[in-house]
Amino acid sequence: MPEPPRTDEGWYVLHDFRTVNWAAWRAAPEEKRRRAVAEGREYLDERTDRDGEGWSAVFSVLGHKADFLVLHLRPTTRELDTAERRFEATTLADYATQSSSYVSVTEASGYSESAREYFEEGETENEGLQRYIESRIYPDRPGADHVSFYPMDKRRGEELNWYDLPFDERAEHMSAHGEIGRDYAGKVTQIISSSVGLDDYEWGVTLFADDPTDIKDLLYEMRFDPSSSRYAEFGRFYFGRRFPPAALEAFLAGEPVPTDEGGASGDRPEGLRADLADLGVSLDTPEGAHAVLVESSADLEELREAVDGLRGNFEHYDSHVRTTVEETADGAAAVSVWTTASAADTASGFLADLPGAADTEVGAVGGVADRADDGEGPHEATDDAGDGIRGELADLDIYAGQPHGEDVYAMVLYSEADLEELRAEVEDLRDGFERYDTHVRTAVYEGETADRAAVVSIWETESAADTAGGFLADLPGIVGRAGGDSGFGTMGMFYTVEPGRREEFVEKFETVGGLLEEMEGHRETDLMVNVEDENDMFIASQWRAKDDAMAFFRSEEFADAVEWGRDVLADRPRHVFLA
View 1: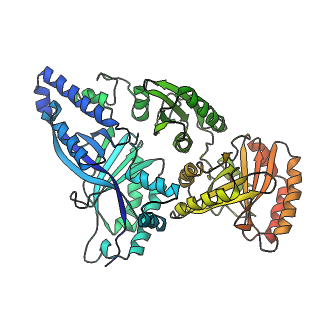
View 2 (view 1 turned 120 degrees about the vertical axis):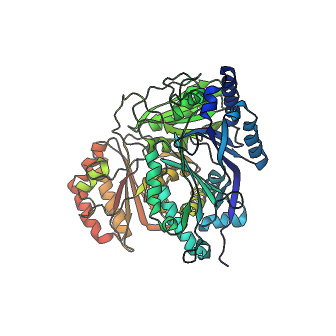
View 3 (view 1 turned 30 degrees about the vertical axis):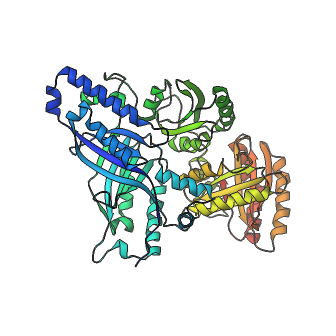
């Protein structure tokens, strides 16, 4: 019999689809409609946030299948059952009957090698993997505006039967399928829940996004993957828009939602802006901006001090708009605004570690355009020809006359921790990273002159590098991302030297290093060596501004160094702006 994957389960999930009897609602006495709205809003308000013990959300459903969806996640079936029956006790239930429902439980499966280790031992010292598993089975409530839900099966036909495939073949399919999804990190959030024995299909898939076309693009691309095209069967799709409980009256009145408190049609913002408004936080932001909201139980001054430290780093990036601490009715909150979604998503990894952080939400906040989106954020290493630094480097033929043959994205952090302690922590993280095909390598580099080490993690996609950065930030002794306190940032130059030519390379670096010290805008350059492979080196060169760094790459000295490198390098150099 083929080997089934191990699984771990978390919260139970109920998709409760409701259809409104609009004729009965319009004919109902005004007093009863008011009572229905009040009881319905109270029901939803009480269940929206449960302090880490699950959550609920309400969505307006487009199309004929239902009018609204109440989504519940709870630790036990008893609580889920109670939430469902409690709605039936409200006056609103007289007009909103359950037209469909779906019952499932959040699930993480053990198809990857590192995940199998977790399931065999029941826990893992790999904090990155542990965090990943927990995010799958105890998901945070997404702040995105739109939701898409559908149930699905794996095909069990005479010719194509998923359950007859060997474990390794299924694992390979799942890895390729997941790779597509990882390219949409920061755009689409998913909750995968198993319904084997609980409902008519085997899984429920719930997707959240601010832009509904991101959901469409993701699913369209996945349709061509064999895991879907050959082995998947789907049920009905439901699509909706999130609205806060405060907008229930407006929803039932046929007015735009979300709206202002009290149900009058107005300008109440959607998504994260609505949550900010609920906290009494008002923002004037650029058009298309995204923000991070972190609610904290910490003392106000303690939070401000911690945020001041992060803000100093954030302000190196043109995509940063502002980061502030706001006093709220329940304590304090940090709000960080960025011009791009991926920059906000990256920043959230740092902000989530603020003292007392209880809930982190990332989403679009829109607003009046007052700042151009022309900068690079902590996530960015653009590869469009002629656009940004990567394009300029390609135009200069700095890859020994070859076009840019591979896109990689890198994250660099510096640490002053004990080298052996740092290596052990990085090895644990690397075990988790290696289950992703987008992972190129993660290594520790020891500096020749600086009393610190560099952790370099290289990925094939920008979103994967962003995600990895959140885990890397938790390493011991971190003193800042590359470029965090040095103007423009770090130009990372990676070299693999032919065995036996290492000493020549080091001598050449000393010559070039002497030239760099005399160049305008140069801050610091160090040769850092992979502690596991002395022939793999990383030159960290920090500059005051982009133009200063580019002047070096236009110089005859750099051209001579590239020409010389043809003989001593085992592979062509890679030049990646890391910060």
